[in-house]
Amino acid sequence: MDPSPLIHADEGRRPVSAEAIKSVVCQIVEQSQPECVILFGYHAFGQPRLGSDVDPVVINTSLKDTDQAVHICQTMECHFGLDLIVRTPATLDWRLALGDSFLQEAITQAVILHELTDRRMVT
Image (cartoon, rainbow, N blue to C red; front, side):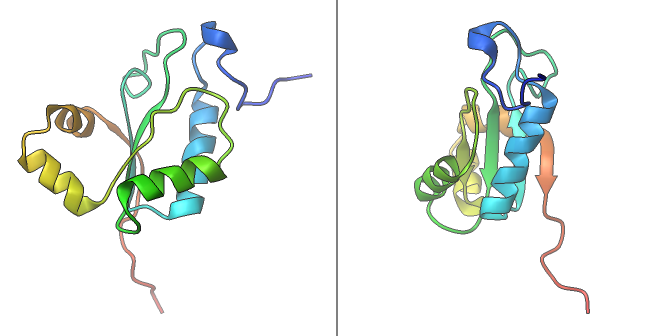
């Protein structure tokens, strides 16, 4: 029987698959309808190390950052290391203006996995 794509990364013996990351991003988008989901870290560069966790940044205008992160994590199925960061656009801009080097690197060296391009309904 083939293992599910959301199987834990075998206690560090193999990297998380692209399919598993895509599944998690789909769950994030379904749960919170964010403006953007980006991936940074080893998985974004296509060079995950054994046991590397997955590092998404979710940019969303609804709820407080921590409330949103807790809500997403409680409602999704994920069986691997996930370091989820949720920021509102205003908080992200503020942190970048303060010189937050961690977020600056995460944003500039990231891969966009989801981007909401237009919220208007076309009738």
